[in-house]
Length: 444
Image (tube, rainbow, N blue to C red):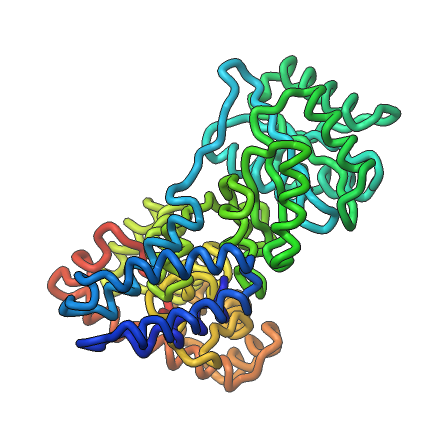
C-alpha cells in the first residue's frame, strides 16, 4: 500500500532526519521535493499546494528551528498535517433509529462496487448485524450473478427481481428486509465507464425511493486525479455521505486517498485491501498517514492478529512448547493461521521502517505454499515423527507435493533447527512468558 510514495517521501525527508541544525533554506528545499513527490503520486495540485504551505508555516516557527531535534519535529508536523488532510479521525457509519438501515452503493463501472457490497455485508455481520444485499444493477446481468455468487460464498442473502426498474427493485428489497428481520440493506447500483446523465438519474431515483442513511461512493484507488473529478460530480448529484477506496492492495500511487477528503469534503469510511470478502477495513487517517511516512501501522497489525487468534489453539500450542512437543502438524497449523491474516507482504508493510528496506526484499508466498504442500503430503505419523522419513518416504512426499527431494530435505533441516530452539525456549518457563497474550507465528 503506497510503497512507492512512501519510499519517495522518505528519500525527500532523509536530509532533515537526524540533523542537529537546519535552516529555512533547506526546509524550503525539502518541502519543494515533498510537493514534487505528492504531484507525482497524482495528488490534486491545489491540495498539494495548501498542504505544503501549511507545513512550511509551522516548520519555520522559532521553536522548531531552535529545537534539539528539528528534523524529527518537521516529520511530526508533516504527519499531523497529513492526518488532518485525510480527515483527522475515523468516521462511523450512520444507522437508522428504526431498522433497516439502508446503504446505497454508487460509483463508476469497474470501481469494485459489487465486490465492496459483499465485503460490507461480511464486515457488518462481524459486528452483529444481519445484512441483505440487493442487486439493483438492471443493465448488467453479470453484476447480479456476481453479487449472488459473492453472497452465497459469504452466507449473506441476496434479493433480486426481474421486470422492475432499479428504483423498484431497491424499494422491494427494503420491504423484503423488513419482513425478514434484516437490519441493514446494501443496494448495489449500476455504473458506467464514465459519468453520464442516465446513470445519475437512475441512482438519484433510487435515493428518492429508499431514503438511505448512507450513500457510499466507491472509487478505484489507482485512478488518481480522475477519482477527485468523478467524486465531485457524484457529490453534486447525490450528496454522498462517505467514500470507499478499493484496490488499496494494488500499485496505488496514493493521490486519490490524499486528495479525496480535502477536495470533496466527505470522509473516507472504508478501504478495500484484498480480493477476499473479509478484506475490508475501516479507514483510519492516522494509521494511513503513519504508513505513508514509513512509521508502520502496528495497531492494524495487532487487530489482524487478534481477529484471527484462536485462543484455545494458542493455549494448546503453549503447552506443547512447555513440553517440547512441537511437531510438523503444529508448524503447519501456525503457518496457515499467519497466511489467513492476509498477504504477507501486506503484513510486513505494517512494520515500521519497511519503506527503507531494499525494494528487492519481498515475501515469497510461493515458497510458503510449497512448505504447506510438503507437510500436507506427509502422513499423520510422519508429521509427528519426522525422524522416520527415510529416502523412499522423502521421494514419495516430493512427488506428492510437486517439489524436489532437496526441498523436502531443506524443510526438515530447518524444522530440526526450530525444534532445538523450541526446546531451549521451553526450559524454565521462558516459552510461557513469551507466549502469554500472543500467537507465535511459526517460521518467522
